[in-house]
Length: 276
Image 1 (cartoon, helix red, strand yellow):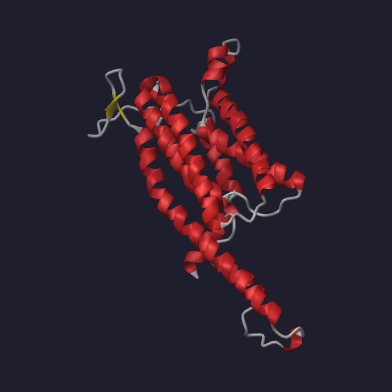
Image 2 (image 1 turned 180 degrees about the vertical axis):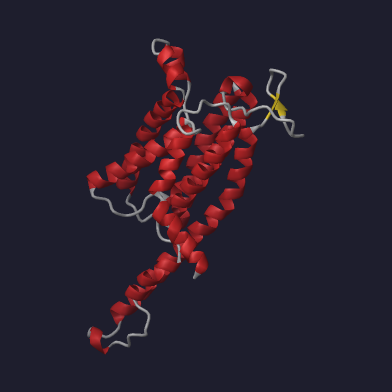
């Protein structure tokens, strides 16, 4: 079996198994029918986006190969899958009226799945088109053309393996925060029904939620993954021989910039958390 196909299939299996384990551990608040509707939207959006951004990565090459089915079917990009998967989920949630955050349980499976898939990219070599630019660094890899190159696939695997424990910590903090809010709300409901007679200094659901500006919120694990991965790809793609379409950035890098702008308020909130 081709290494790319094997590790891509393995990444899907492992990621889905980890997702199911996390769903059991953290007691997913989203009902099963709604959860599967969100997953279906994510898969459809990811499949479309992975192809679209691949075609836009090199517009001139795509234009020359518009009538080549092998080219049009052959490639895809993870960034496009993540961007359009996110867009599809947000649109589907708005359509069905779901306001709860749904992405936290996907963060670790996505990071692990991408890392496993990158093993296949590395073993495939030049034909995978994920190799780096020439370099004289001691860990440079000859992918078959006799030129020592950066191994961006290995950089990405190392980055994701380092990111997973951080995502786990964020996910645990979100879970603990949710439990505090629930317990505080239950305590408040058992207190005196007359709000005026309550001690304003006593903790209740309102103060718990108000204090959440200094803690991670539901949805932050997925947002943190997206911000971290897009930041990494924005920088890492400078050492890939991709065409620069505008202001020295490639199509994938511009997609990363747009996602970072989309999450800019969350990034600012996290920075405030570190200073308070």
